[in-house]
Image 1 (tube, chains in turn purple, yellow):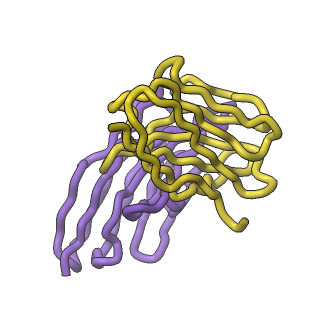
Image 2: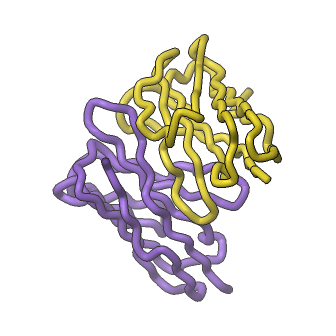
Length: 111
Length: 114
């Protein structure tokens, strides 16, 4: 069974602080995606990383895929209240379209 | 429609009853996924379809749960003899086949078993 553990589970910070969310697994994935979900809505894709060691930047968000393709991180610089939400990593195995989600990190950014 | 549509948005049912949850995917998307999500947790995989067939149903918790996609478009998740533990938000997503493709989610059906 492929499991994706995220840490921390909860994060409550002040506006302007930096933070990192981790996504770890014992399984190897062909690609890894990060989603953000707001209350009452479905998850929305932020980024997909495909190559081991890959780093992608999306404005204040930096995503990294581990060299061994088993883990990933999301770093947010100068967090804003609009970043508040549930952040989810999701892995795609090899030779499958099955998408497995991580346990989730709930972020709250206070003004 | 432009996005994934799930109906109903909310469903309250009595313990032991049968329920059907419907998902209309984005037109042309061949892959369709069902997930179950508890508050504050990540979506739990239930089943996914490639076209009309269930490519992987390993996440269905027991034989009370069943899903179909007879024409490769609309899918229905069916739950028999509902239990209070089945209460959750059921999410549907669709995507084009292939690795690294984005999954587009509906807003979910909130199922409450009383």
